[in-house]
Every structure is written in C-alpha cells, then in structure tokens.
Length: 439
Image 1 (cartoon, rainbow, N blue to C red):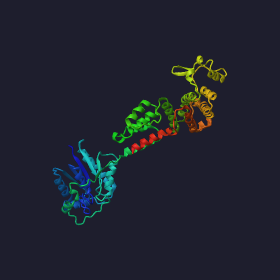
Image 2: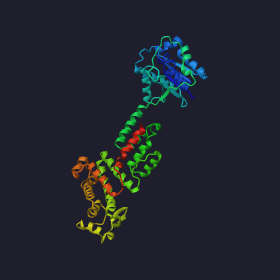
Image 3: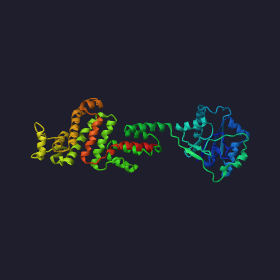
Image 4: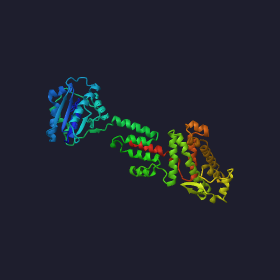
C-alpha cells in the first residue's frame, strides 16, 4: 500500500509551541515525512485540549492544505481515564498492543514512524524500550527544539488559529529538525557483548558464528574482519589473503612466504598460551624449533642442513652418503655412542651443530634451553594423558610458558627474518580494529 504511518503520543508543545511559535514534534514529523495515516495517542489532559478547540486536527488539516495533500487519515487513540502519565509499565503494555494492531494492518511496502519526542518521559521511555527489544521494525524519530534546549510548556490562552499563522515552520525554507534514532535491539547488544568476549580470548570462529546469526546490516562493518581473523588463527593464508582484499585491512605484518609461515605459526603458539591451551602450546613447539634451528644454522653458520639430507615421504632424513667424510657428519656421529642413526632430522641434531659452529654464546644458550624444554615436557604432553598447566611446565622445565615463548621470540633474531618487536602485537591490533568497526 506504500503507506507512511505515524504513531505519536501527544505532548505539551503539540501541535505548535506557544513559547517559540514553531511546530511541536508531532506536527513537525508530519511536515517532513508526510505520513498518509496518523495515530494520535491522547491522555486525559490532551483529549480535553482536543475537545476544547480541535487544535491537533486543525493544525494537521492546515498543514495538509499547505502541502496540497488530501485523504490523510487521522485516528485518535483516546485514554480519557489516563491521568497517571508517569507510569512506565502502563505505557509499555498499552503501546505494545496498539503498535501490534497497527503492524497487523501493514504490508511490506508500508513504513511505520514512531514519535519519541512528544509525551511524558514515561511515554518516550516505553516506546524506546519497545524499539530496543526489537519487537517492531519501525523508524523512531526525534525532533530537536528550535533553540536546541528543553521545551517550556505554556497552555493558558492557547489560540490555535493565531499560532498557525505565526508558526515559523510554515516558511518554505524551514529547518528540518527531525532525526532518526537507530536504537540497537537488546539481542544485538547482547550478541555484540558476546562477540567482544570471544575476541578478547582470540576465539574468532565463535565470534564469527555469533555474528552470522545477526542481521547483515548490523555486522557488515566487521564480519569480514572476524572471518579474516578466524582464517588467520587457522593459518589458512589463501583465505586470509582473500579477506585482506575484501576488507582492505592487512593484518599480516610479515609478508615473505616462509617468514610469514614461521612467524604466524609462532604467533599462533603465543595465542594458545594466552588462552591457557598449554598442552597444544607444548605440542606445537617441536616443529617450529626444528625449522628455526635449521634456518639460524644456515644464516649464522653458513651450514645448510639440506646439503646432508634427503626427502622421504615429505620428511627430511639424514643421508649417510652426504654425511660421510664431512665435518658435519663427524660432529653428529661424535655426540652419540653408536653414531648418528639414519632417520628424521631432530632439534637435538641441529642444536649440536649450533654448539659446534656458532660463535654467539647467547644463540647457543637459547638453543640449549629450547631443546631442554622440548625434551623435558613434549613427550609427556604428546604421549601421556596428563594435565599440562603453567605450574607443571615450570616444574618440569624451570620456565613458565611465557618465558619459553619469550625465548622462542628471541631466537627469531638469529633467523634473519627481520621481525620487529611490534609485529608480535599484531593480533591485539587486529582485535582493536574489529572492536573499532563494531562501534
């Protein structure tokens, strides 16, 4: 039917203020939005005003005449017994029933406006609560006073015909004082608080799952960022790259392929630590320790482990034919009673080479400590059903989880990847970006 419908309580400055000779809120909304159907809600006092001089219908009739509009329906909702206009509970329930009836007569082409500037504070609050609960898809409209301060009410000697002639808003260049108030629904507020809590613990999959249950228009500014973060925590770089293009926000401080892979993996371990996932943190240490040791050995000592290994089923294993007759082979054989067994490359092997070839005491110390941590606790976490806590980590290794992570971060210096201290804060910056987009 393409109707614009207004529901409006009537207040003390309706229809025209005696104090400033400007539209009251109800009349001003009608002037701006040109509704085709108007529901006027009148308490006992307002109904007496209407019966005394027909002021509300008179002003609306003059406005429609000025606008050249006909066939506008005005429906009075009368509450002649209503004197306690401060009781919120009454208005909440009464407004709810009235608006339900109005909505029942609407179709998808109609639009409902609700005036939240007229009436008593209890009336305005009742309407705002209904909107906040998300019960009705309506547009709430607020009207500023001409002086942009609180209205003063004067009722004695009210002359509607004179006030219409003096109404400054009849000027064709009148100032539009209407503002649509976008009230967040209670469910939206609740869901956003849940999302924020998930973000605080880096649980982006859960945050995105909650966001996807909400209206698209409520999450369009940040859902893509959540999905990017969820892909990042899973180390799904193709998906991350796609979301970077779609959102225009680059969350990855390290770009180079292998450097990005190792940095993001280590950063992922730090997130597991922050979330208290100590077992996963410990289990995840070995792969990156082996790789970082190899990279640092090549960068600092000019020894490339690949020169002494071959691939078997995608795993690097020592190749005796490449080791025989080399100093590397001698170092490795000399540290094991029966010599180096042919098999996968382990962190202990690389640590021995670092100890032999590196001139950097700090690098050797870090390598020893990281290997000792791995040896002390990893097998227990990987092969036993055991509770791993930060206290248990300290008991078995002599270091807390954070101290171990700090050692891992410091060892990155020897890889030559050029990772800055600020890069390790990139998840917190990503969180701040998402939270800012939610505001």
